[in-house]
Length: 235
Image 1 (cartoon, rainbow, N blue to C red):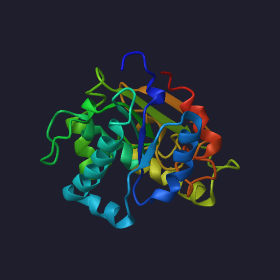
Image 2 (image 1 turned 60 degrees about the vertical axis):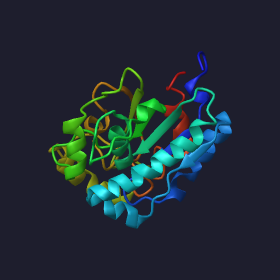
Image 3 (image 1 turned 120 degrees about the horizontal axis):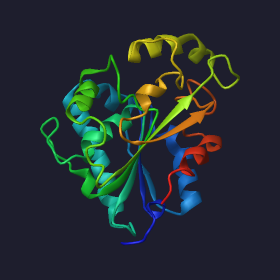
């Protein structure tokens, strides 16, 4: 519907590797309370995530994304849905949008979704799982930018600051080296900023923000951080 804000349309949240649905409930509740829109969290167990080492595991979860999107599209004043993907979920949503075959499937999600927000997603990486690397080779950047507003959010976490967990302090440098080849980069405790800022997307950088609860108390989905990126989305 012309003139209707994308902030008033339903939202589907797709989480990250081995992170179960309840971690995203505060984010879903915050969006619903702030906007009144319906919000769905894509159901995914740890077993579902372990299966994403293979293509069938990706397709199974993207089928669930599609089911949530189709359910909410009929309730949308814009006839479109906003996607939010955290960590690996943000990478997996990129092939969902395109009008091309990936792993034998074509979802063409850009006909139903006009905004993708990724939170700490490892888009560009020197070392990535085979399927995530395949996404960036086949669909670099924002191939559906004429239909979809791509927004990439990255966090900068001081490994010695009060928000960083002991786990993050011990492991962040190794993670940055594994992903981008440089242990001295800045990032959210797991994903370096350079990896999370998807090429050609709109970029939002957050200070003192962890990748997830394991890495720091305040992360992208914490109530004290959500408004910092949500308020920058625009209509």
